[in-house]
Image (tube, rainbow, N blue to C red; front, side, top):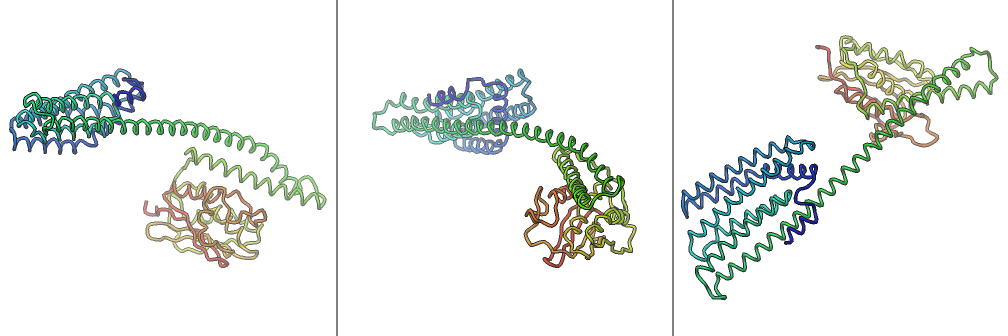
Length: 456
């Protein structure tokens, strides 16, 4: 009764399509996972029966139960391939599972009862224990389909009563006989099995409810993420167009195309030009970050000369270094044949981030050097500065999004905190990595390692 009440509370006898498919998948996956454990139990029971009772009896039992197990495997594979919209197939497999449950339960019950009938009254430890083990196994592992569990427990319970009631009928013992003790023990065991079934059923339903809540929360999170992504992308693109116009106008004014400006106006416009450039870089970084999150970053890989890549990076960032009064030079390398495979534009983006960081944190008049070398099976490109260095344990701040080593409002080197995070992602997509070595007050060296493609 308790099991039926739990069933009524949880759901109707036949659940909805989606819930039923979930139950079927859970039921068959457990059945498939425990198949060898069940085979060991059935084989042990058959061997004991053959040795102590009747070999033919044991062989028939084991043959029938193996057929039921094979049918379980076939049904498990069918259920795994089902989709939520396959209404007819879902219910067809559901009823096949119930039918196979009846057959396998009947085989176990007939085995236990027939073995008990071959024994003397009261000497039924083996068949009763086997029934108890089968019922407990069902209570622990068949709660995904309540009707299948109810069928098994009902059939095992009837078998329990048939065995002990047969002894009572044949012997007609007094109430103080141990045969009556067996009867009352069986009643207690049946109650215990039903109680265990209810506990496992409630736990399963609770887990399903939690999974459903997590799924719904996941869907809401996905929807919020999509809305956020669309908003960021739209705003970034909408800002980019007017900002380009503003920046272009400020550049024209600052270069003197519209005539000489008063000193105060010139300083204000120069500051506005620098800030518009910073804003443009921030928008570009946000758009790159958006592409990375959406897995839409495109890479056009080709075989590249390491020498040419490093030269392009040094030449392309000379102006930035000059603004900061820092010398940007390239280390001499005799091996100009080294090659890598990658997207030139994206690798230049990494190089620009590494060089700009080195320049920003270098004192006036210092030098930043860029070079490369082959180390085992990789090409290692380095950017070395003689700046303030990076304290130990700061790797997360260097590579996390929107993170700055110096987050104060008065920091010397402004930035979005996205450059190195984006660089690390680009390096990963090139099967490489980016890391650094640093000594405080002596300088920092950033490394970009990429697979060697010289022999390709």
